[in-house]
Amino acid sequence: MGVDLATSGIESKLTVNIVGGAGRMGKLLAKSMRNRVGALRIISRSPERGKEAAKELDVEWAPIEEAHKADVVIVSVPMDETVDACRNMAGRMSQGSLLVDLTSVKTGIVDAVSASTPANIEYLSLHPLFGPNVENVAGRRIIAIKARPGPKTEDFIDLLESCGCIVKVSTVEEHDEAMASIQVLHHFALLSLSKAIGRVVAGRNLSEYLTESFERTLINIESIERNLETIYKIQRMNPHGETVRRIFIDEANKLNSLDFNINNLNICLRNLIKALKPKS
Ligand SMILES: NC(=O)c1ccc[n+]([C@@H]2O[C@H](COP(=O)([O-])OP(=O)(O)OC[C@H]3O[C@@H](n4cnc5c(N)ncnc54)[C@H](OP(=O)(O)O)[C@@H]3O)[C@@H](O)[C@H]2O)c1
Image 1 (cartoon, rainbow, N blue to C red):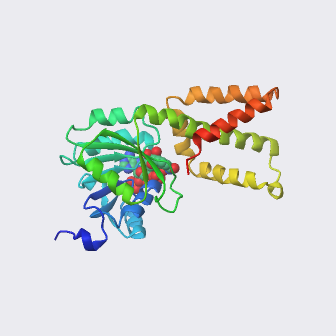
Image 2: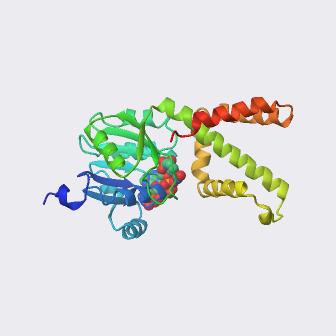
């Protein structure tokens, strides 16, 4: 029987399978989309993990052999497993269906997946600019690279927007260049800070000395700690990683001389804030 979209509260007829749906990002997407699509299934290689996640999210689960049977297959597996997982999936998907990945680095992945998937399968490469610890996706930014666009791609982007996501369309090059600053440098700075403080503090408890500013930094360090494997892969796989890390070290060395002009530094900070702060 067809779904009556007008009365069901469902906003899309798309059927969606999430490979790696029992993982962190997979669960978050499932939770955000489950009431807005025709059907949503968690795909897991393990019946135990699949059933447990499906029960928690109140959706169905299916084994990996069934993963290709949907309008949209989201591959939410570790970054370095993504190309193989997409390749295995796409060959079995039906004509006109949509393959989606979520990787945080695009160079070496989008081209490889595009080259190894049939031309009659659409392919959309997403990067959610948030981690699995957020409550839901509403108001959160997602980068979208329309690697092989078509009608399902547009329907799926509409679905993301109906979940409250802010979707920005980009390219592989533009994405990785931007992320070299926003992720690679940001994570590297926090890791360097953590290592340096760990060395200076050497096990002493300074918790009663925390400033409010440091408490905010600590929240970011905690989030990095929970995601260390992905963060390491972003450092390694972003093609600009080494260059921007060298610039960071160079700037740290220059600052270390303390021979800087406060006015110039002030202008630099103000320009950065102006360039990066979202317009309200
Ligand atoms: N974590 C973040 O902050 C974040 C943010 C933005 C984007 N992303 C991207 O989101 C994707 C998933 O990351 P995550 O943090 O959710 O990872 P995760 O928690 O490790 O979950 C990945 C899931 O993939 C499944 N899996 C692993 N290898 C597989 C393979 N070879 N074939 C099929 N399934 C496999 C596993 O599920 P089963 O064992 O149950 O099959 C696992 O639970 C990555 O591409 C990552 O770059 C992550």
